Length: 150
Image 1 (cartoon, rainbow, N blue to C red):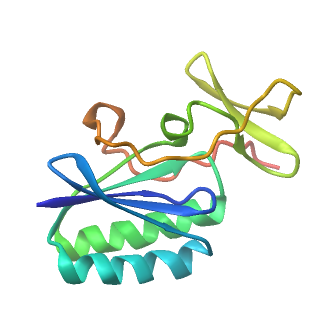
Image 2 (cartoon, rainbow, N blue to C red):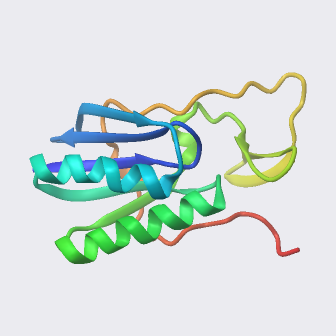
Image 3 (cartoon, rainbow, N blue to C red):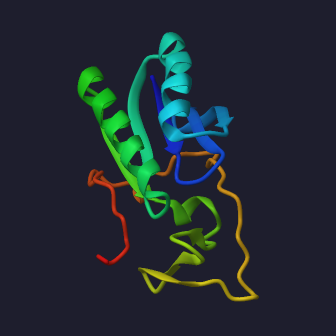
């Protein structure tokens, strides 16, 4: 059985195909989540029997998080497979993640904060893990937007 992990909170969108929790194929595509996910999953579902889905539910692009959640949750319901979620800081070496305007999300002291970049802050690219670590994923899959109400 295979599992799929999706990082769609920034471009390029990354999708990893895992067998026994080990990455076997990495997909990378630029574009809107609403265009990229159906295209990639069309390819994946034709060739592989998926037993689990994982995704990054925060923080990052609101629209991308919403689209990913609805797409993946629908697929989970139709295929009767579990969905799990985690935060993006695990996959970019805990570097800042673009928020709104000129602000960025930071993960400090087990809390997500929003602030401007400092000259010493480094922004790292997202990468798919070589191994899926179940311990960092949760069954609480609802998107977390992490911004206060306006």
